[in-house]
Length: 236
Image 1 (tube, rainbow, N blue to C red):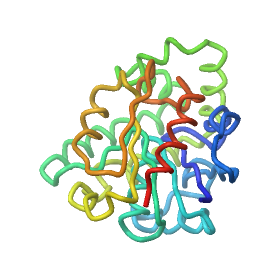
Image 2 (image 1 turned 120 degrees about the vertical axis):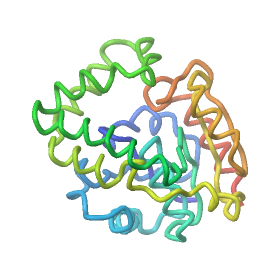
Image 3 (image 1 turned 60 degrees about the vertical axis):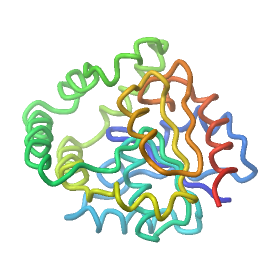
Image 4 (image 1 turned 135 degrees about the vertical axis):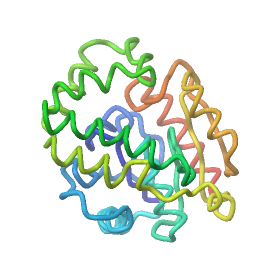
């Protein structure tokens, strides 16, 4: 099964380097850049951005995504643009009555990007409780990630939040069940919110990564590579 790898918000294809180094599946994966992250500009709608990603993964029959990449991967699977998905730290969407509040949150982050740039944004973004467990990662690895994030265009990151954030994304909760045999889920064991989300979703398999929070690609890449292989094996 040929796999494509999709990074999270603020990331890039190199976020997968340590996972790829520990890869356990026969075919080497293809890591791609999301729109607004080196994969072309952010387009006008969630759906047109899915089309752009689908074009970038042509020839792949399994898409493996982390966080924003997991949401994109889910969209690709439920829309029939890709056959299988392994989703790491996924949120399938929010109900309509939560969209306005979420849009205000994303708009505030977008204003920070546009007014103060990526460095100031990154300082604030990485202080969120969601990323607290990353303090266990060696400082050099965290610094390398930050250096790559700082290369992004603040306008494009802002656009990504506005067009590809949870407020703009369809609510896929009800669409997961018909595709359950083609979806595997992974979450960091210390990422309580996303463990709870995954536990409530029908899927072919669900595994947690010990000693990892929201981002196993950074925190436990070798264990993640092994979990991905098991997740792919469970897909039908």
